[in-house]
Length: 86
Image 1 (cartoon, rainbow, N blue to C red):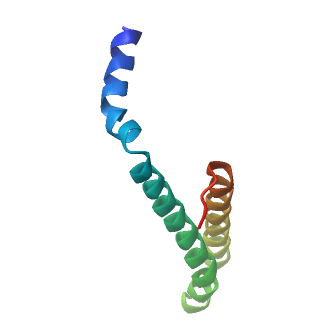
Image 2 (cartoon, rainbow, N blue to C red; image 1 turned 135 degrees about the vertical axis):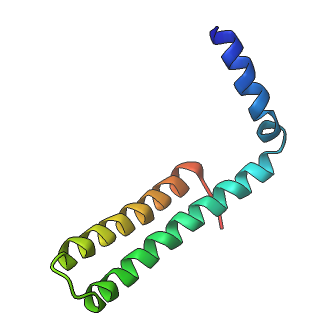
């Protein structure tokens, strides 16, 4: 059973092994997107907190800031681990 699953997975991933440049470009674009989303969340979370008049503003602000920091940090760490050069 394991061999069948392994064969199917390797069959599905064959195009990625045959074209490493495309895979590298996909990785770079994904990491760039994660980094941009993180920066946008960190930049606009305070603006959202100012514009929204609600009791849960502090929690939303902290959630957006934490999520932005996490996404930005994860993208930077993954770039460092994968050795993405710009």
